[in-house]
Length: 203
Image 1 (cartoon, rainbow, N blue to C red):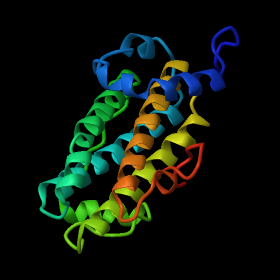
Image 2 (cartoon, rainbow, N blue to C red):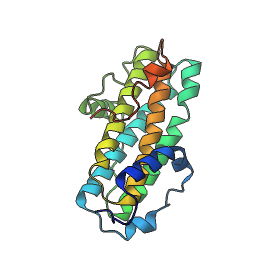
Image 3 (cartoon, rainbow, N blue to C red):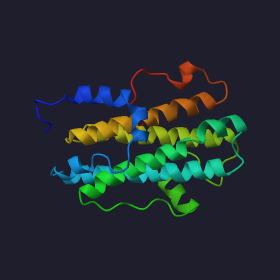
């Protein structure tokens, strides 16, 4: 359990969400010493592996979509920075996982593998079968929401305060992606892109 003299889970959630952009400036090894001094439970290692798998799937899908000609110039420009964001998330999570003695999972090695992972996550649309920008955006949007949902669930399982802060920061950044993709959809408005004040994703 978190030491009662430290910040509460609510305080960490608020601080983490407010500082989402700051995560991208953190070196991959930041916080490793703190993580290595704790004795994490197996569930934390398992959660980190699950989150890394989702992040690697996001990286693969973003690279595929951005590397094709399926997006128009405006959407392409908006989404192009997201690959770097997701790679930063992977680096930070891998550092925490390795500090706990966990094995870093592999990402998709082919379109077929990525599509199988998408199906397992309940994400509609398949790489190689996208018929236009709208299909690509909805695939990425749903995958972002599934990822946000995984972070939301993880926050109910984690006890390490430093790891909770990291997860909050990443979750906040994924929520920004969700909003930008939503604004890139046809006939989108700020209200349709951000329909709720609280972010929970798809679970």
